[in-house]
Length: 173
Ligand code: RP5
Picture 1 (cartoon, rainbow, N blue to C red):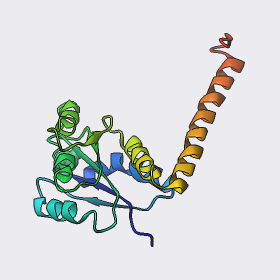
Picture 2 (cartoon, rainbow, N blue to C red):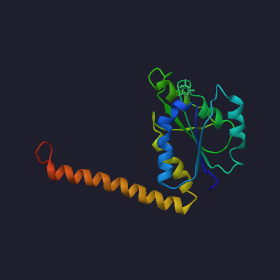
Picture 3 (tube, rainbow, N blue to C red):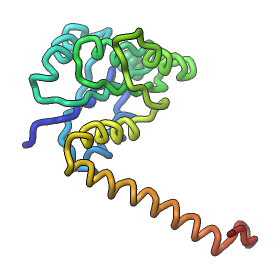
Picture 4 (cartoon, rainbow, N blue to C red):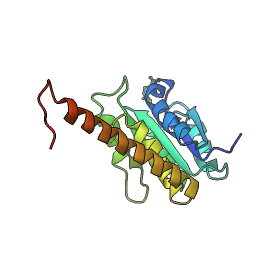
């Protein structure tokens, strides 16, 4: 088994339904990752141990998701110099999701967390790949193909819509 280059961590098992989207895209891009639950509030010692040992374990990027009083991404960022991507999650203890966004986004100067959209775990996976791709040509090439496929899907939907129209009305140009 290859050494994980990306860690996907989350505050609770209940975050997995969102965070699995980061795992899926890393699988698509064939990037080795590890995935686990670490709670900043319920298992603080485990969080400290993880953050302090992340680099020596061979990890290169950390994706951390949490909801409500979402302290995990920021606290892990305080424990390592690896890039940390934060995923705010609209969880059962969120008011409306803004609480999670602001908890992760509004970091003090010196301790950045690259925060993606609410529930934006797929983009967190893609951003982690792009960070790796800045140093690894093989990953950059996979990302080129990935983005070409995105473009092809949009162009196909545009072609279909223009050919068939909206409720029969042509709207192509
Ligand atoms: C946060 O509290 C977790 O990240 C999760 O989003 C939220 C709710 O956790 P559970 O009560 O479902 O374990 O710390």
